[in-house]
Length: 247
Ligand SMILES: Nc1ncnc2c1ncn2[C@@H]1O[C@H](COP(=O)(O)OP(=O)(O)OP(=O)(O)O)[C@@H](O)[C@H]1O
Image (cartoon, rainbow, N blue to C red):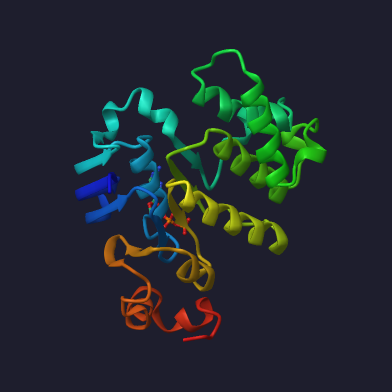
């Protein structure tokens, strides 16, 4: 199977403080990787490096077998839902216009076709925002905005979908639909990287789990890795709370 992502000996620092240390991981086509770790562990930073927003201090990051800094056309195959999007940018836009932006990236800013419009409608229906398609993004609730951003990424039909805590502020019913959607992606061979604090759900849904706290503690199948000991190491005794007291 094709390698979608390969990270080797990655380091990153902010203001001389090491945030990511010797990270090595890879992702195959159609795989679903979950990343967990406490606040400040470097998860968002790692995603930003994978997307190419931040240049790492050291190490290599290959996406679609190419150095991420040199991606051109391939950039449109990456769908990214950031944790804290730049809201100002979208304020005057309607919901359907933001979702269409995702589609425009994918079709190289050409005139939208019937297929594009159909897809935009479909993802809005899937994320249950069709009824608010004419509302202004900046006037929506946090959870609604999050659904719009997910729909925008889906409209890109990405080969690699990167989600930074996408279900924060989203109600349970939408969360469930969202995870069903992610399972469908797997069938279409889309690779997914999901950062979440919901360890209960993430360990159930993903193929591979990466436990990060500046270093990568574990990277493997959730069933195979000794998650109990690692969570304790990552989170301290509070890990029981994080795992819904199931451990
Ligand atoms: N632009 C920046 N400049 C300086 N420090 C930063 C910057 N971005 C993040 N940091 C710091 O780097 C560390 C890792 O941040 P990051 O957002 O990657 O963590 P995280 O694991 O995503 O955390 P959370 O779970 O709270 O979202 C934190 O200590 C943060 O304060």
